[in-house]
Amino acid sequence: MATESPSTEIAVAEKPKKVPVQAGGKLAAMIPTDVDQAYRMAQALARSSMTPKSYGNDPDKIFVGIIAGAEVGLAPFMALQSIAVIGNNPAIWGDGALALVQGSGLLIDMEETDDGNEATCRLVRKGRETPIIRTFSMEDAKKAGLAGKQGPWTQYPQRMRQMRARAWAMRDGFADVLKGIGIAEEVKDFAVVEGGEVAAQPLTRAMLQQQAEEVEPADTLTPDNPTAAEGRDDTDMGEDHVDEEHPARAAVDAHLKRIAALELKSDVDLAISDFSANKAALPDDMRAEVEDAEHNRLMRFSTVTGG
Image (cartoon, rainbow, N blue to C red; front, side):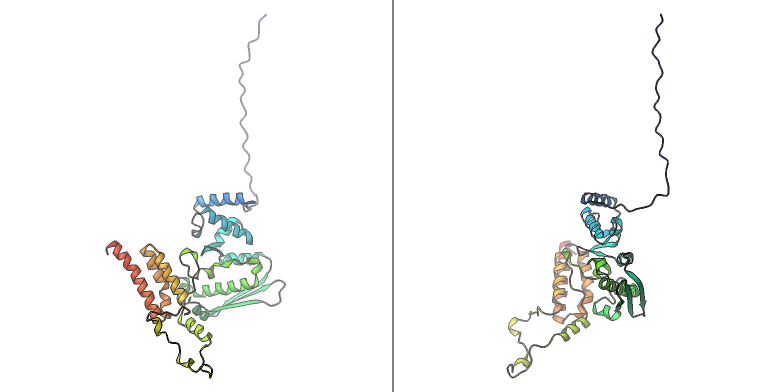
């Protein structure tokens, strides 16, 4: 009886069918649901080198930017595009702030005008009868030391007035939407020194004069104080005595501290340039103090390089 030989047929596995490409899906932002997911996203964004310069491809800063954006309802990537790190604090760009206000459903109407000198922003909020109206003029810019400042305030003064008026109106009328985050167009005009500390705003003669006029004279000639009119005698304090209460003292000290801490001549040159607009508002002795300190700091670089 013949025996059947074993089958030599080889089973061929079927190739998996390709999943058909489907179109028409709804786009949606990728929103992390916990801290671990948010930080993993921050690490991926840091490696991509596609984040704004202020974050410096630092996953920790990016993580904080994502969290800050989540506080006001921004998706992660939108948060990084709308929130800047200025002076180690988060601040939201004006367009991002306006997007939040418009998206809140609370803004009924908005009107912005500029007469060539003063910008006006008028916002009408749901549930509030009185419109929120704020203005910002070139006189305001001069008082803040912004008029004539190199950069946007010289190139696009009308746009900068508009952004300031808008920022004030949004902050005053929609604080619950912005949740206390500063407006970048305002914050970036503050002078930032080493360590991320925000220094005093640039000073002008008008600002110093205004502050001087607001101070009531303490030494008034009266029967109880017959020598008050003679003034204070500072001769015993020496020729180098500087009044620590002078309005410009804080800004000068911050500038001197900044240039003393910088290690590159290019950075010192930039710091000196940034402060140069303030010198015209300083009293002669304080201006000489600043110029001497700047000169001595620059001379150290010449000594090191042999130049």
